[in-house]
Image 1: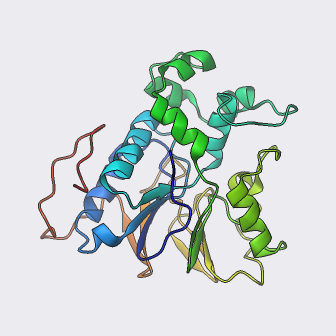
Image 2: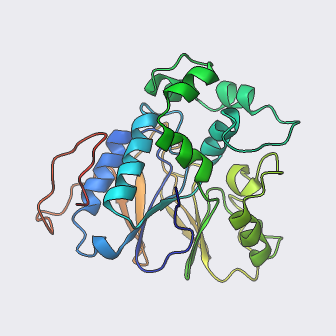
Length: 266
């Protein structure tokens, strides 16, 4: 499974989903009204799983979108990284204990429940996950580059060269116990390197509303706990939130919502 890591053109970037499929459906239904949807990339900023009610359903929606709307991609969040590490789908340093950490600290109960697996039984979860779901967790990129934006789950280090960081992100250095670009909260208020030529778009730390700063954009408005899911249209800087009313006239007839077999973009 290959996910795009270099994109161009208009974008709709979606914040941390955390299994909130009703909110995600609302956002996707509104995107269906965009006249340029076929040319627009849809980028998920990571944290598709854990906390919310249906992580499995959220992954199914993402996979359906990748099939129905090829201009769809996603970066790994710390929750996908922790889940993949716990299930031994990606290599991890020998001194880490991701199985215990993910199960106990990441709100994974809803993930186990959505797959019909016994909570804490990683072998049961692994066996009940469809192969496509395991493959997605294995292959998620750590960043997506655009001429005007860098999409990365937690942000980047303001004190390290931009190109060095993007190189490590593209290579996915699994020798790191907790890749900070996925896991650190220190980048939340840290700005960007002086040589950063783009706006860095991230989620990871919840904010009350989408934040537009100097070469910085923060888009996680729920944390998987409360609030509405946000999506930002770029380069327009237009915010779409779940619960908003769609335009009065669609650009084309919108099909009914179908969980597990989405037809929004056909």
